[in-house]
Length: 158
Image (cartoon, rainbow, N blue to C red; front, side, top):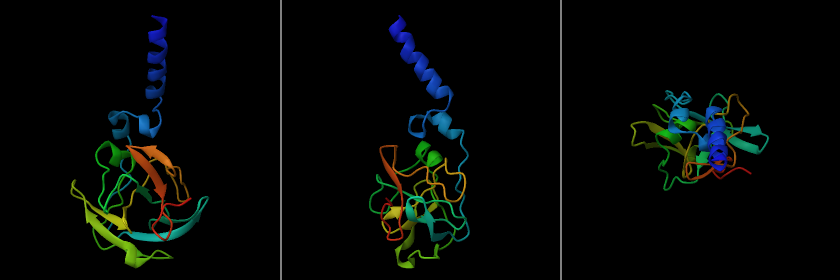
């Protein structure tokens, strides 16, 4: 009996504290408000960070790629999109301050939104990034693949 209680107690401790994003239940992830709401015209620009030059939105929040995405289409929905809200726009995205306009486009999501794409990567926020310059989503594994900030060339930042 003692062997069964220890794993159960550990599970309860982790889940009651929220656990790590990739280990949260869908209910725990749902408790986080979505960071992304469509903006009239999304802005993508380049900023300096602790991991080098990266793409950020108009407010300086880090934008990420999801390695599970293929051919410019998102594979992040439901619980995934709660933890990694897509960068949505109502208009054509704009490139500023070092971002390349020829790499910017949009893609329609199956949940009805229009997501900003840079190169081949749909763009996302990470719910644990709280202020400009945060890169807490860098090199995370969650929802079946790795997540990375992007550099100005549209590749994963190192």
